[in-house]
Image (cartoon, rainbow, N blue to C red; front, side, top):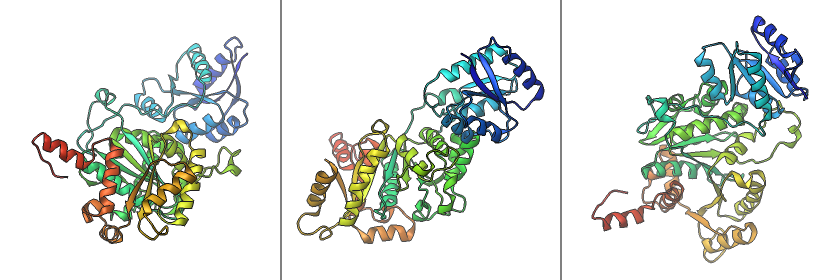
Length: 439
């Protein structure tokens, strides 16, 4: 049985020699179409007539999005680079291409690569090519690449909440700020495809969204930690922000494959990557058979699937709690169980009277336990004055209202997310050891 292959080789001399060698009959590979450009290649791939594509690295428009579309069509990619072009090979490795050969490779080597590529099951992972990572700052990355590969990989925490503005961005900003305050370097990523507001919440100019620029570099295979550090805005020591798209009509710029690559690099830049997600989890089923169409909610679903921990935020009123119950059911259905742990449920704006008489925390916990099967709930008290002061001045709760009950609750949540002892416990441990430190 032969493997049907399509080609898109830019150099006519190499292409002629390659086609002649592969079509001899005894190679186990058959060229079913010679494509003239990327559009032709993707169109043929979508028909299901090929299992592999042999492509030149300099094919115009060949990027991460093209690779994702080939993967959707179950077509493996073998890419040819000019002999000795290390920069081209590095770019392809950053894009996630596993099978890279020099253009003058022997037909036997190309056939072997095609056979190996088509034999791999499932989608190819996005590789984070070893690059620099500065342990002390978010800019000026100059470490040696060999030592960078041994650096620890950070965790991704996705902050999600159903429709209705339950305070998801407030929680995400506070988490990232408090994690940095606990001595753990954090990067806050605004990935809300319906219009991110992290920049406005922190008083940052958002004329050039960092997340859009990072996605473009990731699509072209040019994103590394040095580039991501330059695109991030440092707010406080150890706390940086990758601003989002404030205009909702720019959502096509955040393709899932590009966002996955951005997070892969972000893991090497920060110890904890906090991502503010969009609210919608629909799968866009009407587009399920159109592999070329972008999906607006694909970015949110990609972040949730890639996250090490999910934080689900709801508000403490009957309508918001109903949305949270339904949203948690949708979340379990949309995100595979293996993609992350059970979400940490946070009920924001807890106040007396919003859910009737009695203890509001007990009532909310009982409702979520009964209707959503949630065993543990974290609460953030309603503190309008503190949140207004922070938003009006473009500061975090940690800066604007350090003694606010809402801030203290979010600080304890951040300690749990970062995996460090809560501040009160740290004080006791330090006191027992005869030391002291400000919290």
